[in-house]
Length: 206
Image 1: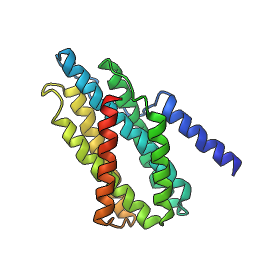
Image 2: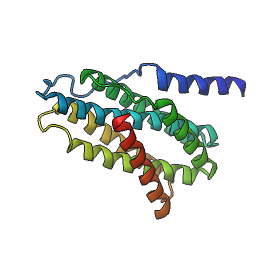
Image 3: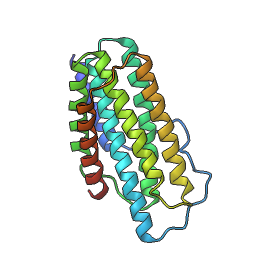
Image 4: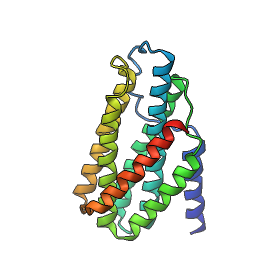
């Protein structure tokens, strides 16, 4: 138990403070940089900061959910999704740097809150745990789609990153459904949406 606690704590520290790694090449690296004025660059960097926070939260959610699941198949699925989210973390981090932006100052807070949500979701059983995962991914997918419409029309580098992330999130939702996810009640989905809205609005600026 002690070894597992140390491992989980190490995972949290690496997610929040260490540079993320990626196996797949970052999408869009072969595309030219778009011509943007300073305001547009700052806006795009802020959007990518929001997405980076989303990936911080995803890591914490998956970690919390896996910690309380007794099903090895579900834990394996969560681990696979977490690995892809780590790549998203690396891509958004690099794109923020390319645009001259910075990561959120509240990342430890975001991580802690999402970890608590993940553990709570897992306590309701695997079917609801997976339902929470599926709904989270659907909301993230919609969020990424909206960001694609908010960046400069010729910013293909950012667009390509967002699109690959969207495809991965859709795949994670499909996996959760395949493993037996239950549909969450509408009030829970609305609460999740409002919590996400508060987080994304804050992360855009801080």
